[in-house]
Length: 158
Image (cartoon, rainbow, N blue to C red; front, side, top):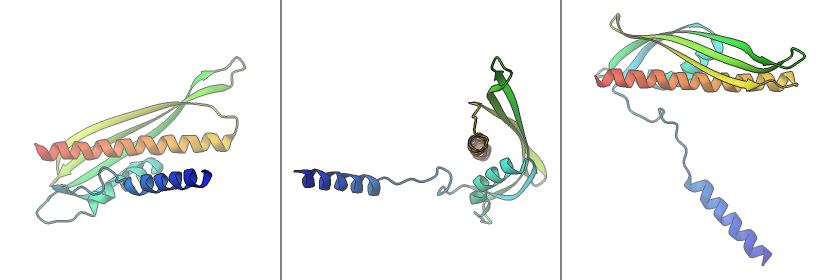
């Protein structure tokens, strides 16, 4: 009885793993535009994550497509939100601000600023705290990259 149950569980796990397919939203999509140049200023970590999001479109070269240049300026800010009775920080807020311009043939088509924030708890282990901050920063930056792609798609639809 135990062997049959074990084999059944393995079989369901096998079907569950192989039947699910994960694809990033913006990776396999064929856009009607390309990103010719990405100019980055400001925080290197934020810019690297955004550039990784946009590079899939940048490599999508076709002479028939509209081409855009993007200028991105990013900043990161970390503040203490609350302290305990001893004055030690309990919660932090990390915020990123990204200003971007989309140009086509040196004409500014869109000039926008995005600000994303996240509040998180302090950790007694500095390594875990740094890891948490890096994960939050990467998630916020990826969200900004998705927003930039969506704004280009909306711009291209008009």
